[in-house]
Length: 236
Image (cartoon, rainbow, N blue to C red; front, side):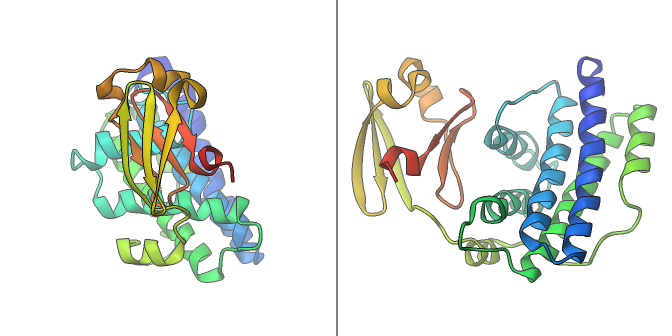
């Protein structure tokens, strides 16, 4: 465990466990939107603890998710199916919290709880390998002893079916202080000085290192810890 973040790691592990319990309660009480949201936050807090254990701190959810994929999924430390679980939970949470007329169905809420516990257990295993007795004891105490349910990991096809894609981003390119965005069959041009001072100041390597949300809600630049809402860019 990184001593600089020891208390933060402990707090996030405890929040992950509390969120799992809250998700189960919300699911039992038929509050499916809130159950899905709490399930996502359980995974988010676990992911945050994992990154803090590596000495990494991020201010945004998209930064945490992108870093988990870059440092753990791509390195083979976390299975790709578990990484997709985290993405799916994030997208489902947007329906639960901001879906307006859309709601999370019971089946998806149950899958979200199982996916969150699966992700937390993977994080437990990784943190336990730090050989820190205090961390291992805390993890054993706060995480549930039995799995919530035996469900298959969310696969790419299910993910696409369960959360409708908001925007279809085909390409992003830069030239000088302009960003060119090919989206929803149209070409858009934006002045970086207006939409993002960070991108305006960034070099080509930082600009080209971006992640588009699977649902097409936004774009994240990990090296800059910068996020842009596509709806915001389009004035929707």
